[in-house]
Length: 198
Image 1 (spheres, rainbow, N blue to C red):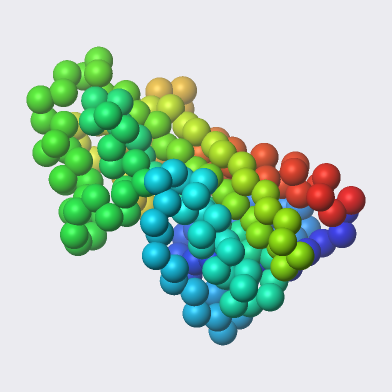
Image 2 (image 1 turned 90 degrees about the vertical axis):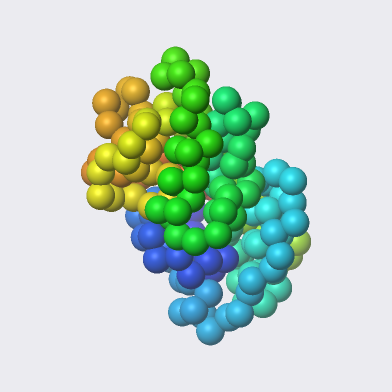
């Protein structure tokens, strides 16, 4: 499989690092929007993670003329009927810490045995020739009542992965890159990619 250069439809340094770790192992190069001198910030109007990932990848591909990879990910909490879902990054105004606090407030009355949730990630790749790939990954967990750990980002400090015995914010980066929802979606994408560019 020949190595390819992709543009990530994001300037999030943590997403870039994760994507480089996973696709870099396949020999591919990944650059951010900023590194390519590209502006792309489409409105995420999709109702699903897959739709939003495609919106971002299509926009970046048009702007850069390169194969573009985008992920749209979020947290789905069973007791909140799947919220915050596709609006995870816009669940409330403010920082990641504000959104975590808002989530915990909304879950105050939810008993421990009903605090199940999952992280979901959809990864989309759009090629300049019009081909599109979309894959999905999920990781099951439980929402704690208080934060634990200093790593990760977003809702990681309250997302407890039972099989790991710790939150995503406590997981070493290499372990998170191996088991996370985004990792699963990216590994599936990397497999699909092998078929596309053989």
